[in-house]
Amino acid sequence: MSKLTRREFVYMTAMLSAAPVFANSHTRLANTVSKKPEDYYKLDSFGNVRLMHMTDSHAQLLPVYFREPDVNLGFHTNYGKVPHIVGEKLLNHYGIKGNKRLEYAFSCVNFEQHAKHMGKVGGFAQIKTVVDHLRNNFGAEKTLLMDGGDTWQGSWTSLQTRGKDMVQAMNKLGVDVAVGHWEFTYTADEVLANVKELKAEFLAQNIFVKEDAIMNGSPVYDESSGHLFKPYTIKTLGKARVAIIGQAFPYTTIANPQRFIPDWSFGIKENEMQKMVDHIRKTEKPDAVIVLSHNGFDVDKKMAEVCTGIDFIMGGHTHDGVPEAVPVKNKGGVSYVCNAGSNGKFLNVLDLDIQKGKIKDFKFTLLPIFSDLVPENKEMKAFIEDTRKPFLKDLNRVIATTDETLFRRGNFNGSWDQIICDALRAVKGADISLSPGFRWGTTMMPGQAITFDDLSTQTAMTYAETYARDFSGADIKLTLEDVADNLFNPDPFLQSGGDMVRTGGISYTIDPRKPIGERITNIRLSNGKPLEANKMYKVAGWSTVGAKSPGEPVWETVETYMKEMKHFNKQNLKVDVPDMIGVKGNPGIVL
Image (cartoon, rainbow, N blue to C red; front, side, top):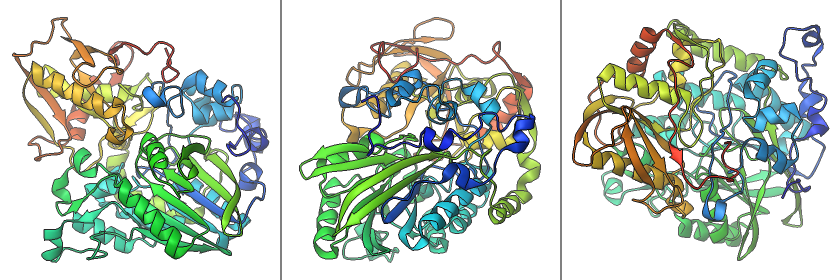
């Protein structure tokens, strides 16, 4: 499709045409810009239930810059389908080319130019203003706010408070229902303590406590089922009854350390999901069934295909800002999959018209949160300032400067990741470096001073320790193949949702269409010599999910390197990306 239908509504020129592009610039116009949220965030009255949804904020309390990916490849059944359309092709797909606000929100096109004029996005003080406006404008008794997870991790303050700062932020924001993923990278006791402080209901139909742990007295929501948390809730919104089912990230104990949560098990649990939906439909008789998910977009699409009776899946994890509710056919009819991007950049608004026990119609709106258009909520702003105050000496410490845009998001590499890889090699004296393909992390504009606050948005986590040890060439290839399969496996249920491992000191060729073991070829060292399978190489890295690594946390490694470099430019920062086969014409890459 190239144009949006009414059901696939996007927040287009109807509202944002009134928003000046240069509101953030130092001109006379900037002094006349309206700061009333209703001027740009007033949605036409529709239906009788409003569901608001945000996800993957990664503890970014302040407004940020965030560059959308120029590589988000899709293959097999997801070739050429959102979110695997980027750049100009995305703008043409949705018919929004030329609308500068929406270009900036949804694509990487002209990022630096747009960021310079329109400024940062998100910010909890701005989100609070928009949420309160949309809740009060529609009717608080008919409105629900959901958080899709990855909220308690991603900043220095969240790491130092063990996620408690974000629990308080969620409470002040008025979150009603939540699920998790990176929340589980704290210890089990810390997670349970945070959930206890959280005013929202924390749901998960797919997290279970192991039987032997239950017998030994481990906390459990339901001993008979083994559910760690409440699996679903029923919310009365006006005269409607809406069921919300929680779906945590299914591969938490594979992608993240199980040593923090040894008594808990995860999984997609699609059969259990179907039983849960059937049970709710039969016994609770709700007017709508919503899944609040942290599966990732493609996984949610498959779940919508194999499970019937779900009206909407409000998803997260893969950080895709998708400006439509994507219809997915199944044996029971059609379910819709939605995603709300990351870093507080977007807010999903799903308005439902519920009549006689069924959804008669709906309107879906993906709202970009332009921080230059939204006044800060004073109470939330004060909370953020108080939260950051004890750490300001560290947060404001300048480490280096940059003439280059520093970003992370993209299937293969980013300039932030390159700095991390270069730092690991330089400081550890390694031949090769490996850095995880995390999707969290914000963007920096050229000309900015790089502070420790900026560095921590790329590295602040509970298992950031570094290592340097010998790997054989065969082991290095196996690592690349294994991660590539997580990204490009034809079965979405076998994808973990991250990006390709970042590399330093080597180059390689990848054909994402090939099966595992055949995707990676022509691995070469930076001196041009081929990687030898039987030869040993010193490899530096961080973030091991097994045993704790022995080295210093990676932010110390990178800070050491950045202080030595002092300034980054085209001469000393070259982003290494692999040679790609089979991607020509793919709308998921800007070539």
